[in-house]
Length: 225
Image (tube, rainbow, N blue to C red; front, side, top):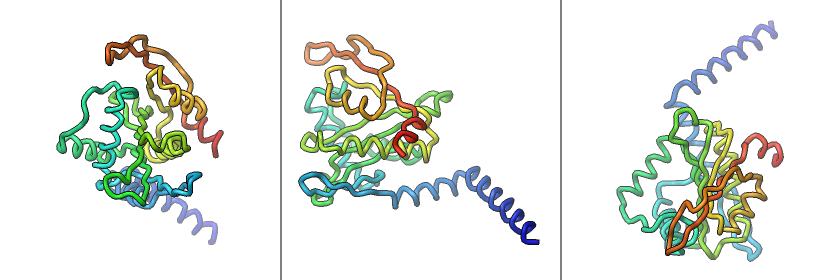
């Protein structure tokens, strides 16, 4: 009798799981609840505590402020003009949430809005239907907070969340060949170079090569349990 009841509950539980993951509304609700509570705290060498968590609506201005600040550095992004349009900022946020794409932020709770967001790491979906298993990584950090281990924490969380929530099997990225700091970080995490596009970008009367890299999520997680 006990064995029969146990088998019955196992069957019901399996059917419930199948129903949940085939019902997008319920699945998205569960994901959103998980995202709301997922966060971790890291402590820097200077004693500052940084929160690593998923993006919230209130972070949008801080995220785009970081983006524009890096554009002004004119060294790491192939973009010449800052983002000003509130409509485009809001559209970006809606796209992240609608497609369950990954955006992990680093927050310094001691700073006031919008300066509390000191970094962010996205893993976005590929535009191709046949490449839904691929995630495209991009990361930004305030200049003051580079080389402190925050970038590594952001990338680690983003990779794990993309595998857990979106079943991403491979993460790809691209980087200026001149960005030696970023290339060192990516390689130390486990990304491998798969190609170089020569003279891909032209900025300030100078050509830049683009380095293409990839990482397989299962291999990464197995090596970093």
